[in-house]
Image (cartoon, rainbow, N blue to C red):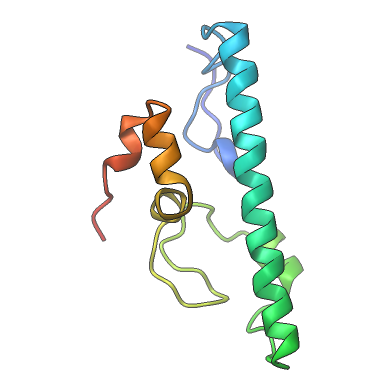
Length: 112
């Protein structure tokens, strides 16, 4: 097995973790991940627009939120105070379609 990755979105995975998947499957997963990321980006943009429209100040600067070393698995978002994990947010936003696609793991809730 190749080296383990220690940070970023691939934290905890190994190099070439998905290399044994069929190339067509990898391409479809890339499309799915890109769509999830785009949906999440648009949701964030909507939230930012609502903050600006109401004249609310951000509790943390966006560049610090993105690059400030906050865990992407965080059970607490510094900007809005939620205690959901990133997996729980994925399940809420995209769980139904991921289950339909065969990702049974999405239904496995993490304990708080």
